Image 1 (cartoon, rainbow over the protein chains, first blue to last red):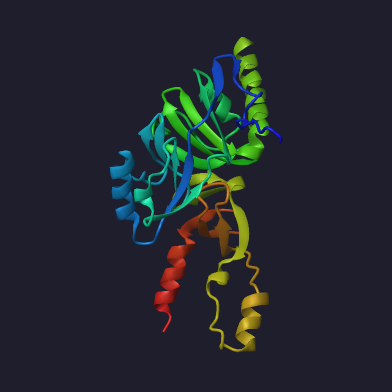
Image 2 (cartoon, helix red, strand yellow):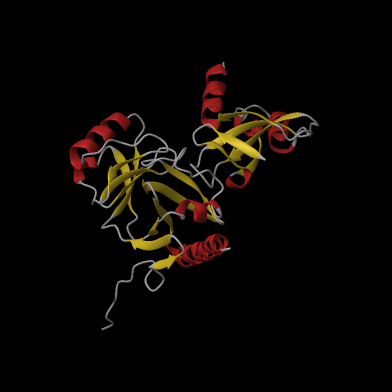
Amino acid sequence: MAELIAKTPCAGLLPLEGGAVAVTEVVPEAMTLMAPFNGREAAFSDALKDAHGMATPAPKRATGREGARAVWFGRGQVMLIGARAQTALAGHAAQTDQSDAWAAVRIAGDDAEAVLARLVPMDLRQRVFKRGHTARTLLGHMTTSITRVGDDAFMILVFRSMAETLVHELQTAMKGVAGRRGA
Amino acid sequence: MRITCPICGERDRREFYYVGDAVLLERPDPEAGEAAWDDYLHNRDNPAGDTRDLWSHEGGCGAWVVVTRNTVTHEVLATELASDVAADLREARP
């Protein structure tokens, strides 16, 4: 019988380092997309607080911390990242297990903002995009979710099938930024 | 061109997908008759000036947005959530 080997989305692609930026893969234990039912938003937030210790994030915000985050994921949607969704949440929201569906990377370093500025058509500078802020936007041609997880660090999510493109885009932008710095 | 999503704020046009005239939100009654349905499905104004379109914020939060813009100056004059516009239309209906 064939022996199946589990591979992470960015296996063989990361880590990556260049200039003042490092990109590493994040492998959350689970990812669950939650879409609270109409009229159950408050009950869902209470249940999420009881079960995982964090409230439902407002639009464009993320709650929680490393290991278990609730990230706003578009209209009426929250992605629970890290923690396995507890059954207490059932009945309040439609849930979809998307653990293997996303490639998640962490980009950190002094030039992380400069690298993303080459790829993302929105302002991600600290002044306007602070820790705990999140956005659904584009990275190159890919739809993405970007969350600031530190003063110089972001978590980037793209569809798993786009992992290689994501790493390639980041690598090219990192080379460009490093080249400008060296000049 | 930049469009202000009512949820996400001002974003680049490339995050949005154009869907069509906002008249799509005003679907006639099933019994409204052939003329009304023909008009709804096939006839569109082509103004040199202000127009209302439906855009989808597909590269962002996923919301449907009604954008009022000027086809001559390319100025974006207003944006509203399509769900709000549709709810108002439902309320206004006799």
